[in-house]
Length: 275
Image (cartoon, rainbow, N blue to C red; front, side, top):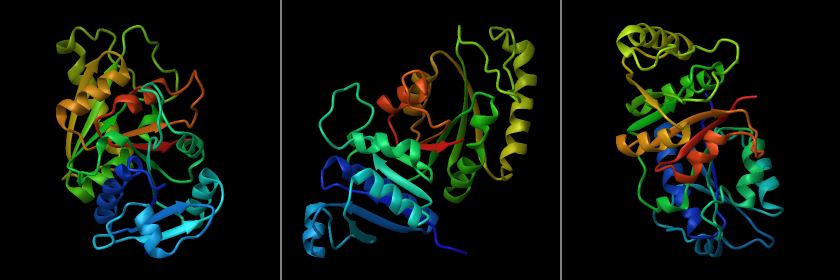
């Protein structure tokens, strides 16, 4: 068996350090090797590199590497070469407006990453991170179902609570993706159709994701704009990680829910790109 690898790029800014506690917590959970990568023009001595990245050398338990080149391509190349299991990134490290999703490096990396990406907003700061509650939004489509097994694996390893949230958005057409489990027609009459639907939904969830029997699982249903409901639920329930599957498109007309969550998420966000 190979040892998992967690790659976290740091650029020397205080904002970028927000990704480090999440990467450290994940590496501890998975018993993985944590690799810190800094992309620069001229190589530095180990002491200079530690000082530039604002790291505490006495507490640092990671492989510290430096590479030259353009930041995004170099990070992607490193993730491929190291066969990284996760890439942990701060959403942005420089100055940006309140409506900006990412910095340019994250924007370029995200749709091309060869492995799942965990996004951390700089507002999170340097507090330690531990996985106790996961939130898995699931709209009944096979695309979102692809996130079940990775989320369940993390929940099993950490002993965390796995919350699955299904959101009904009034006025938004039901997905036409083959295999989608649609919600009951009359969402305002849960005593008629919701119990049967809930049973079928959980049965499918367990079959698709091969969920272990000891997994602590809760199912929630909310009505409203999906991105806002996901963020609100995560804040109310104290979620430590949101797991989202997406198709890899960031153009203006795509990933509306994803973009909404990224802007206001109260916790790190694990993105699983589904071709």
